[in-house]
Image (cartoon, rainbow, N blue to C red; front, side, top):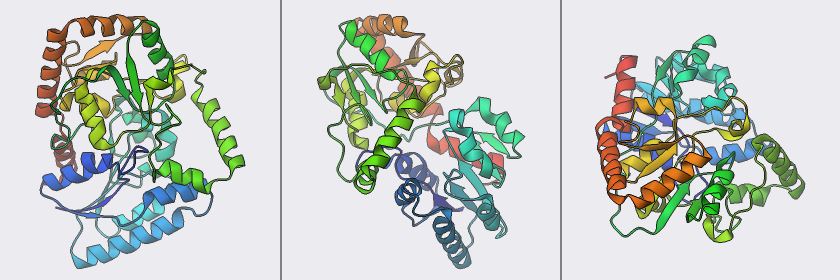
Length: 369
């Protein structure tokens, strides 16, 4: 099958990160498909949108031009994208479909940002949706969703031999109730290290999208953006020790950290909903990346996660802050049980939760082979 692929390479600010390449592009190639990448700087598109320099027209023009020329050379069977409505219009997607090319869009933030993808969802033949509770919302706007949960690529996510370096670590963005939960562990005398955007003003990777945005954005605009971000996040200030805070990791450093940590933390609540009466929680990439890497994983209790792992035997879960402290202390003191869960979690991830299997199942649901 010939696939025209359009997606960001990275979901993080780490210099050189290629997370979506590891999790989508390379598995598509592993399945034996001829994958043609959209030749366009999507990071620059985001910067231009934020700075109000250019809208979607430039991106759409390049997309349609490349697809038409590629299709003229040799038939494209599938247009596969990771887009939201800031990138393309429904009209552009429909033009692709008029060429006789099947279209599918992957989007993994609809749990709390469905409005970002809703305007274009119905234009696609199919939408790959990892949030089970959003399937009806896609149908409501006229889209055809296929439930396709997140996963991990076993050719990249592997155990890294070596001694433990951290008792407890978390790799991911700072927002919501995450700082407060980290503070709770620290107050209980537990050593915790956190890595990712927002945790530390230091170690911002040179050349990252974040740094490029800073270099091109007026200070007044940055201050206004920071005020809006704080208001949206709804996160009260939490004092954390500087030696526990670290900047974003490279993809390789991230996987290494999974192996070097006795306990890898997970948080299920999305953004400011952590403080809302009705918390929105979702299954995440980390829920598969960490077990696939052989790391011990302790994350917030989430019913949907139980559809993919045997909770308590393949991954561990906590109910709230108090339970988090108790579980961390318990598993730090019980190495054999911790190791058994890590081994079982990796075996389950390898057996059932690879991107290769996820994508193949989605293609079969579309009638593609």
